[in-house]
Amino acid sequence: MTAAPSVTDVNPVLRVAPASPARAAAHFRASLAFHADVSDVAAALAAGGDPGFVALDSRSTEAWDQGHVPGAVHLPTALIPEQAGRLLDKDVPVVTYCWGPGCNGATRAALALAELGYRVKEMLGGFEYWAREGFAYETWQGRERRDADPLTAPVDAADCGC
Image (cartoon, rainbow, N blue to C red; front, side, top):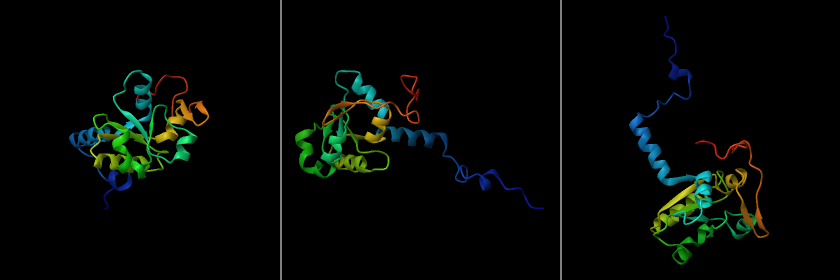
């Protein structure tokens, strides 16, 4: 008689067992040290006063002109080594962003800044999710805002409750 397959044999989610709670907590705590989400960045910037960080757009000038987070510093990734010292204070954490989840420009910018001695986080979702979640952004023509995409942000609540 053949033994019935175990749940890990048929379930691709459990084929590799979850980490222990202690290892999982360490992993997710570390992840939060490296990442911030669009909603948290927007809330911190909207609260008024000094948010305690600077947002950095690491995209090209053409991309910046299409739209960027209000108050962000524009510094394309390739120019970080030569211009970061003029534009950024090493005592102020930096939150990098690029187009969105399909682009690793913010990751490359964060790496370049970290290698120069800056404390840095990456904004998950990038400019794409900033716009899709309905936050105001600036273009070369002025301030704009899109309706929140119901697949990325609640349409009838102030926040997602995350």
